[in-house]
Length: 355
Image (tube, rainbow, N blue to C red):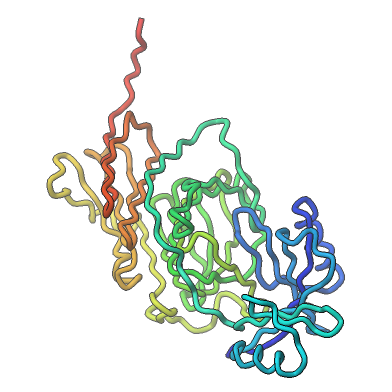
């Protein structure tokens, strides 16, 4: 059950962010949460001996005086009591000023997940040799596939681990609505709370990470490449210092908030390819994620007559994501105020050159 506590807000310039975390860990602090994973700028660290919690935030690099945040399950009542006991209210904010000028903010210890308004757009992201990567959590490289994030509602990342071996990850979980991981190239060993021993994700395998399920990336092949789709775009990642993975009990049907853990292995289901209605010479596999996600998201892999593979992920609000790990010639799109419909036309590149 959630309990209260204090956070001390500490400003930090972006170049000093990761080195400061490393230093604080050397003097006994433990990381609790860091976000966003693709380009970290906020981290919460706790000192287990004293109970002190520091929120390292690059948005407050010029902060001259520390600021406390009081976390509880009744922030409104606490704010009212603080105001009655001599604190000076700050207009429009859940905050008071103490007699010495120290600012105290009041917030819920476990706030509900709020999804941003949906802002549909058509976005085409192409991979090239000059593509820039951003180093994110656990040293993994990230490439943003939806720069406008649909108003902050969705994120899609192309994640790359170039070198084989152990991944410097830790048991953690995400405060999310949903998150999908699709393996495109290489393999990665992962372990999940309540899902048994560690297992491998291989090309065309996919998992649905249920909200707040503890998990860890253990090791990978060289040149691992996966696609990660999540909602909302920016969400908290919490480190769990107490849970050991794998967990002793197997709970394959356990519900984590809105959904259960979902896993699809292509190597175990080669006969599931079936013709697509109204698409001659195309076939598809339904990954069954609608069941695991309680109707929130679906995943299909399609291919034209056993040629290249196209990954299609559809979410609520008519969010439709297509990942094409082969060359394509053109994309046609039609957008209406209510729907975004994309049609992707694939064809093999000709080997002949124009003379």
